[in-house]
Image (cartoon, rainbow, N blue to C red; front, side, top):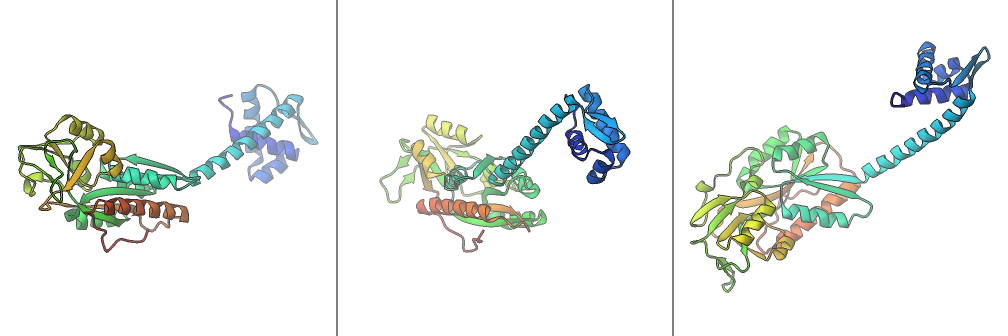
Length: 321
């Protein structure tokens, strides 16, 4: 059975309906010898004859009639299943993003407001993977965060790859610390973090979209007793929970994650780096209305989250997706 060819089953059904190899070959746009050979190969793989060959034409044998009846039902079921799968695929959107609680939560919240749609989101540490997926059409959109000083080079890079960039918002860098940490002082207005005895944790992966190195030693980082590098969002949160003297330098962290892990974020003053949040689409591709609606929902969710932080800016050049 593993040697059966579905197209040969279809050929045999046409032969049975037409009652003639000549007429079936004409209908299938096949040479008659090729069709005869295909039917013979099908019979050889089955181990019994499907047809009785006479001068008057081709007539199914008893076994052949029984087999072809079930084969037709099977092919009909497969066709129906293929249609259902195509419909499901048309309802499915695949989105990619850098490891970001802001994007993941905004996408999930927006997906819940899209009944009947399946939204899949995957995180990638290596930004060229994001761009490859959009360029190849594997993902409909990609979301990333980067230092604003990289923007000109980033847009030039995306243009060369026939991708378009759409800004969603900006924010300063934040110091993120446990609410119970002795480094956090909520009394002043605004609250502050005491960096003098802190260990800074940097996660540079988010801010290197096209190979432009982020060099913390050349920035105006707060004075501290040391710097370590983050290894991933979950591990970073674990480190913050275990180390009372640790401050994570980060872009915006989603408010749900902050509340769940009892964290607070304070903008770093004076500002040493601003971060931009954006969306990448394939140039020239016309997104359908369903995707546009989803992207608009995500954009609004991101902007609401940034605005609620009290420190974010919505760039003037935000494009209407």
